Length: 255
Length: 255
DNA sequence: AATTGTGTTCCCTATGAGCGAATACCGAAG
DNA sequence: CTTCGGTATTCGCTCATAGGGAACACAATT
Image (cartoon, rainbow over all chains, first blue to last red):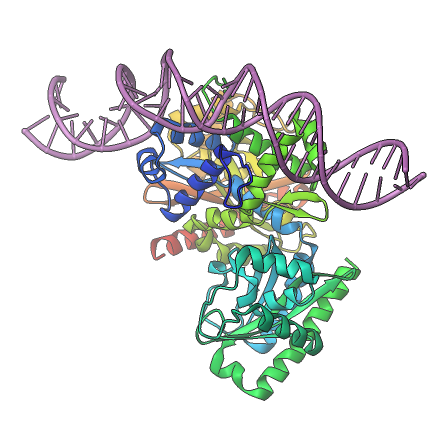
């Protein structure tokens, strides 16, 4: 009887499928034998899964090795485009990054985690592509905290129960009460601040995007800690960030 | 015994999973009952799949309905970024669209089908986002034909066997011999032409991108038939298109 | 309070997912 | 061109489990 960590039944074959995809990604393509060994499955089983995936475009066999297929890209584009905040935020984020020179991000929440849906580079050398499409825990992220601050209390607790408050640096908020206190402050102030709580040397400011009385996501500006730490810089960025979120909210309203 | 159309065994649960994803997309989110009815499955089965998907981020439950989850976006970004031609072609395509005013596309082949990996709007009103991430059959697409022209003959035949040569308009090449003849012409000429063979009123020119002696994809310029049909226009566009593919090949070489 | 629609849980049973072994393929080495 | 060592793929079997059905829980309407 296959079941997940919380003891509820799941579909084993689906888990296998996901594990294969994960492996294909980690190994940048792999063969049947390699996969079977690493997953502790029979080659025949792995093969059957792969064949099914290939049939549906979720995998490709390119010169001998299997790879993640572009059907994932199709589904992924759809999943992203479902968020009207994506369309609404694109231009404001590009503008924000251009005028501040810092990186600007769109963050949305799903199943208690944050994902970077879109980003703009500003003057930084970082390529946004490696970050867009990756998950973060909400409590280590300025945008994530901004979102948490505007979620119902019981949901916040459910999220903490599910994911915990693991430390990424010594600055990470790891205490539930402390986090709740900070969420209060964020609600008052209108934006959240992240001082190297996820990655050393990176500070960020995040503000929620709200529509129909619910948070739909957050915008964030991030950059080198030394630059952002200066008080006047923070105030200036916050100002511009909040203007940008206003723009997004307007775009959402007049979709 | 679950099996695909060609009689080879596949994993039934995977097929179910994919069918659920398809439904979620088509219906823009759906509930358990709705899905169960449409797929001819028990609610409990659908529910178990959905739970598994949610556990892994491949689905979300947002106010009562299930939706395609952003883990697909993560996997999709990865699948796209695997193609170094994507990085290599982005700027050339933007430039091509800017200087011609027509739509410019990057097309790659997977499992005998073409996918639009990237696009640039030019002066057109069409939003590229609805087209990026969608499949086309190779024979109805200028880029697809350019790719076919540089694939080994036996592979071309295998692709035709698998997908056929269905007509999309009265201009579509539906005859195998005729197609092979056209592929010869494309090889000589260096580029492929599509005269309303996929969609009425849309003409396009496509050229292959080659690297290490293999086709890695194709660039294409597409636009209103009336504009592109003029002889001098075609020659001019072809010239610029081929320059762009040269750029991409250079970018690939010096990755 | 009753009704009607959801989603979720429980438990059983037939089926097909996963297994292991046999086979086919495919280069590289002799 | 044959053999070998490594792949991928196919073939049947069998036991775990995917899927089914019914009971239950919950939420919204009336």
